[in-house]
Length: 117
Length: 115
Image (cartoon, rainbow over all chains, first blue to last red; front, side, top):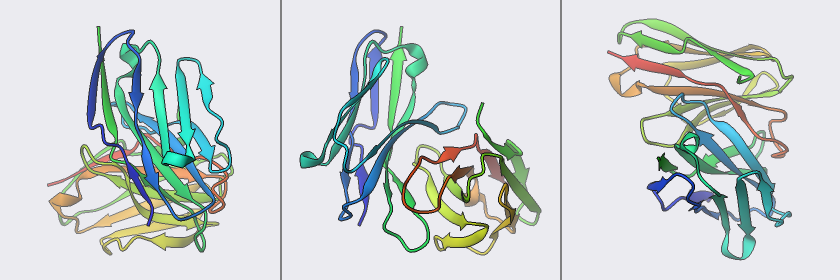
């Protein structure tokens, strides 16, 4: 079974603090993809990053960085020097390719990040 | 701006009404999806269309009826809904139905209230 766990329900930080959002996944597939999406109050899910199961390189994009570790089945997301505009719900998701006709995207329960001044 | 457009953004309907949600994308994607999201919950998959054919139905009640008239359009027909069906309905598309080659692009959603 495919499962994504985001243990942190809500996080509050003060602007300019660094914050890490945790994601742990379970899958028996050898080929899979991990994603992070941001959902601001407007409702749209905004794609942030995709990582495939064969690429464990960490990635940095501006203030965002991701740490993928297969050994611990984790794909954590760090925001450096957080800003008020980062306030949103962040979802980690697992896409597994080994299905009959289409892939399925399974979401974690999300972490609500509140950044205050 | 999102490249997946959903209309209407808000919809209020009674339990005896018939209404439709619409989704459109012009990115040449061949997979389209309907997700349902209740407040403070993650999106849940409802349907997947692969090359305009229904390939996944996650045991969704028949009062929800999807339709894919062409590769750019996806509809969700609603009839005899219940108040517990009130939610944000998200449409998404991706390049290919399987293989996990790319991310899903989501629209802003249609917020449905059933009275």
